[in-house]
Amino acid sequence: MNYNKKLVLADGTEFLGFGYGADVESIGEVVFNTSMVGYQEVATDPSYNGQIVVMTYPLIGNYGINTEDDESIGVALNGFAVRDYNDHPSNFRSRKTFAKKLKDNNVPMISGIDTRKLTRILRDKGTMNGIITNINVTKEEALNKLNQYVNPTNQVSKVSSPRCWESKVDHPKYRIVCIDFGTKLNIIHKLNQCNCDVLVVPYNTTVDDILKYEPDGLFLSNGPGNPEDNPIAIEVVRNLKGKIPIFGICLGHQIIALASGAKTYKMKFGHRGSNHPVKNLMTGKIEITSQNHSYAVDKESLSNTDLNITHLNLLDDTVEGIENKDKYIFSVQYHPESSAGPEDSEYLFGEFMKNIERFKGDQNA
Image 1 (cartoon, rainbow, N blue to C red):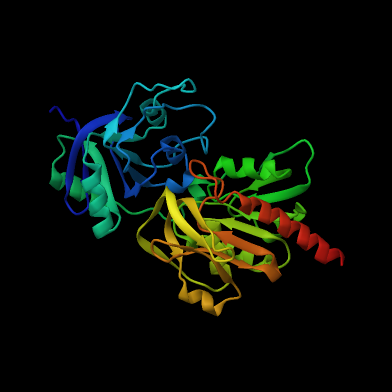
Image 2 (tube, helix red, strand yellow):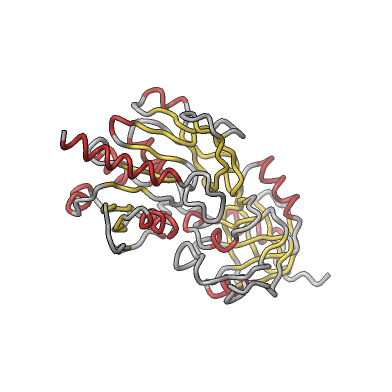
């Protein structure tokens, strides 16, 4: 077969395939996602900044790309790896092919590789760096480039909006400030559906600036990288905890934990997909959730904080939710905005509204 691209892992494993998207060389942390649909949402999720995503579902591209389902303006990830790419989508909503979307954002994709084997390597050895490059690049040359590659830090600064912007509704009931660590647009839509005007602010917005906006609640978004790289946000939560209702998702969840004295750690291969079972310890119900994270909150470290565990992952017992009702703060590790993914956890936006109402009632008592 006339292969023209290869993916080389840091352990020396090579995968030969065909190039789509941008004809560029790219290095990143190779991770896998187990979703059966949602490649557009994955590609436009800022939390994948700096990563090469392997889709375990074999057929990608079959329904194309539309203009409504993007989770951000651009594409933050470094590459895509798939088993079988379909460049002729059949979908009345499609406006362009997936390959065209990637090419427009200078992101390469490799198709035709054994994604089952690749995923098993990542599960056994953990995530590692890889390079998508031309077929004529030798393994030695590729490994030399990987050895010289420096993993990015402070990734939130690369995907957060540099300025404030608003998403308003006709008859707002609440005003929410959302700290943008790489927020997905559907999160903003869900808050709008709760009759909230949402003011999105940069990742490094200070306590004083947030309070100037007189918000009814503070939302902490998802985002890429190590949560410890966000000292300003950690200090914001530390200072506002108990003074305003706070809801965090994904990276926001980790920042709440750090601000409360808990610890976080990097997982072996993380959670990425739309089929992760989580148990709600308050109700006993099982929620199927959408997830995308490399870091998790250390369960044992929470015993030294004022936070209670509310949700646990049924696959590996990792912490999926925490709260302190007395201080009107809670968070989850997964994505209740369900884009793409199941809608089991959308009720959490309603819980945020209830917290705001309870806080107002307590303040007026």
